[in-house]
Structure formats: structure tokens, C-alpha cells
Image (cartoon, rainbow, N blue to C red; front, top):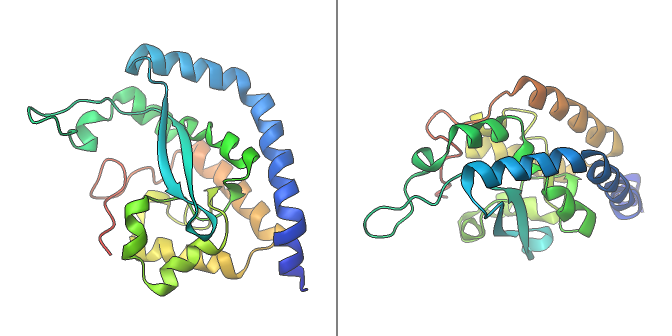
Length: 204
């Protein structure tokens, strides 16, 4: 067993438990305040829950703070993201406050602190064999793609970074990604893509 396998199997999970547990305790007051503001601005449905593929494409439920309204057209269809994303929603996205409930996903083992971001279930049939390799590790709160462009890069670039991470996981790389993520969040960089208020659809 090489060093990469040892880290992935015996160190990364305990690290996730310790860090996510500590962050949940430290950030509990901030999460409570955020929940109150979400309730005030967006209604009683505070959390956004959605099925996402995790390790080996196993489906789990991701939790975030809600950032968009449920505004619909006359036919009952949800309006585009840019119509439903409020100023408050944009703010908590830009500060990544909406991602804080995902710490529970990390603590429970569905996610990791660092790894490819969990995408939509409907994208699974659209991946190439190489792109599908992103599911060889647990999805993360942040990853190589997030510190190399976040939502401002193309899908092909995102997947390239995801697979590179899969092939090169080490403690040092994880720590570098975490430190870069803190800097990016504080600067509120690359929050949206050039063509969408959130992130453009992946079509294969």
C-alpha cells in the first residue's frame, strides 16, 4: 500500500470528522443567524435539499441554505435561476454561507472537506469515461476546480481539475486547497459563470 492509498483510507476520513465537527461547533451561531435571515427573506423552507451522486455515484441528499424563491410561471414551471435568485441569495452565495449545512454531510460521511463538487444526478449519463472518474472519491466542500476558477471556468476545465485531484490526493494538496479556498471566499471571486447567474447547464 503506497502513501496515497494510506492517506485516502486511514487519514482523510478522520481528518474530515475532526474538521467538520469543530467547524460545526464554532460556526453554529453563524449558521443560526443565517437560518433566521433565510426564514425572514425566503420563507419557512430554510434548507435546500437535493439528491446528488457521491462516492461511486452512490446517491445522497445534500443540504444547503436556500438562496432562491419558488417563483413559477403560469404553467407552474420554475422561473430561470436569475429570476429567482434574490439579492440576499446572491450575498450568501458570494460568501459561501449557503454551503455551511454541507458540514453535516461531511461529518456523516457523504462528503469530504476536499473533493470534486457534487453535481446533479441527471448529469451521470452525460459523462465521458474520464469525467466519470470524479466519482472515485467522495465529493467535497471545495476542490481543485474551485480554487482554479470556481464557477467562471468551463465544464471541461472543471472535470480536468476533478480527475487530476483523484489521481493526486495527498494531505499537502488538501491543505493547499483549503487555504486557497479561504482566500477565494474572503475575496468573493468567480461566483458566477460568464453566461449564467449560477452555473450553466452541463449538456455532455
